[in-house]
Image 1 (tube, helix red, strand yellow):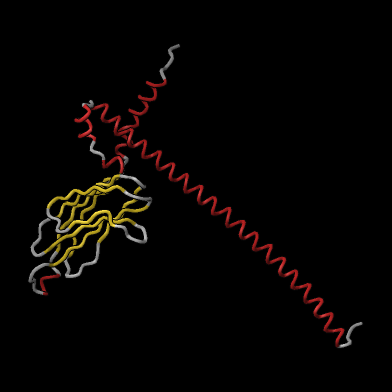
Image 2 (cartoon, helix red, strand yellow):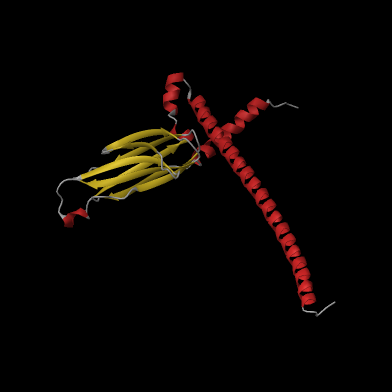
Length: 226
């Protein structure tokens, strides 16, 4: 009987799973029309990202007269921390940030009207934005790494798979931490509810005993009982 090498078996399994893993990765690509206003509200696209994760934003803004598109990358915290901002985006702009904490990263756009534009023409002004957001392993330029380290095609694909597996492990660790936190919250809530129930029982019991002695003393004062 022929014995299988565990290392070669694992490599074969990873190679078989590689196409499905690569094709199952979500692609945060979106194309939309951004209306222009004198004081425009922010149009934000949100994506979930873990802490210390590389996020690369590629925005391709179509040309438009009398318009200025500003971009801002923020997080979902209550302070709305700004990672990066840039004014007057034209053609393609590529921005890279590293997240500070768990949560969502928002890519916000504002399209300002500039110059003298008739009021009846302002509502017709808009620019088309083609947005691509790469997070984690998707944001790594493996072609540049392959050229720098002289990697073969198979080695490059294995490096990609390594990054994907690391992301999956980090995601599982994050979910485990969330489960532990929710479990601790559940146990703490149960203990508080139990303590409140015992406090209610003791309070009602004491109140009932006090009412009995109070009514007994009242009836004695009224000579209704001995």
